[in-house]
Amino acid sequence: MRTSIPVLFVVRIIVNMGMWLERFMIVVSVASRLHAIGMGMYYPTFWDLATLFGSVGLFLMLMFLFIRVLPMISIFEMRELVEKQK
Image 1: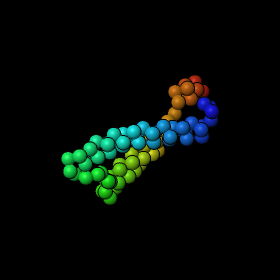
Image 2: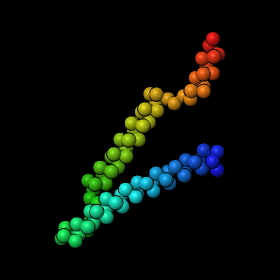
Image 3: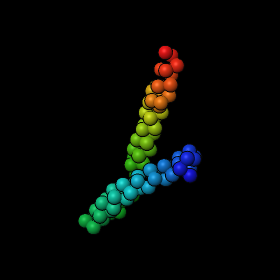
Image 4: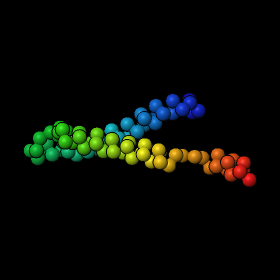
């Protein structure tokens, strides 16, 4: 499983979702404590969700733009290319 790229991709996605949900639960639990002082339970509004999805979309766009403009090339491959040109 450690050498399978699809398995590693799925595990990476699950780990990232878990980390994000942990942070989300911290924010929601703090916001829901406001219920004790009379502000009511926290429920995300349209603008909360729009900000969330917009920030995720902006991050993905910038990441894909970075990959498109500056593709990743390993140093090992660059060494081979330099040696072949000599």
